[in-house]
Every structure is written in C-alpha cells, then in structure tokens.
Image 1: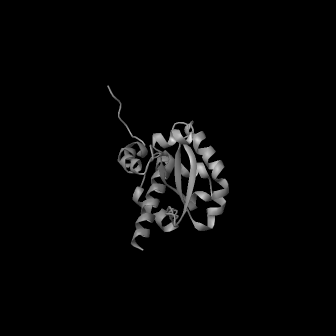
Image 2: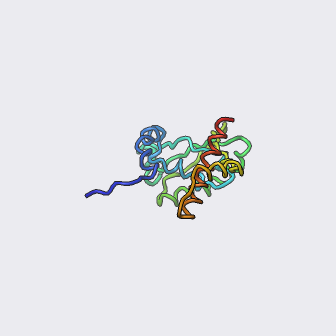
Image 3: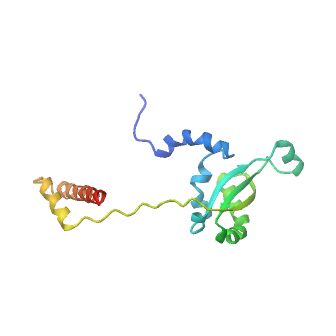
Length: 166
C-alpha cells in the first residue's frame, strides 16, 4: 500500500516550471531557486540568473571544453556589476562545486534591473482587545494548554481580519 501525505511545494511546482526553465537552458530549477545560497547576501538581491548558454558539441570540442561547459548569463544591477565581476571566479567555483562537475565555464554579466523579491510584512501583533475577544469566543476549555493555543490562534485570526479591513 502506497503512503500518501503532504508533499513539499517544490515537488508539486517543479514539473510546471521545468519546461520554462529548459527553454532558458536550465537543466533544473535548482540554480535559480538556490541562487541566494550560491552568491550570498547582499548580492543575491541585486543579481539574477537569466539563462544558460550551452555550446554546440563541435564548438565545445574545438575550444577544448570538457563535456561542453555552459556560459551563465547573469543580470546585475549596474551599481553592483563591478563587485560581481570581481567575484566571477568564486561564483563559477561555487556553482561547479554545488553540482559536482564543471558545468559553468564562463559568466557573462548583463546590466539591467533585477526583479526584487517582495518580502511579506510581518503580521500585526494582537492587541489586548483582540486577545480578550478571542478568550470570550474560546470559552471554557478544560485543558489549559489547548485553551492558550486556541486563544493565540483566535487572536491572530481576528488581527488578520482587522488588518484586511483597513
């Protein structure tokens, strides 16, 4: 009997992203999703992998490249281009180490705007009024731990509802 349960979102989304990423030369979405880990802060917010350009076999053999290493096209905000240019050898080393083979031979920098990831605002903290309203709605619960958890959860829900209205 096969067990079914909750699956990570990445497992469900990857089959849909794979054709889009393949059109840009990426064999997997890992380079794009793992980019912040590869380049590190604060440059991850100012750089974005655009595509991989794989050489044709004949050109790769003529150039003496092992297995046809790719060129990574990287979009960089202009203010950070010089910093990234100095880090190119380190980035190539990190990417190749991550995959365990020499997949990237060169990085080409293209200056331009980078899509900034929007950070979610932290949820508003419940006020004393919302905590009291949640306590009234929870009522009497014999288990004190369960009651506290329900009150916290209820106060969070009420606070979220109030923030949506404003």
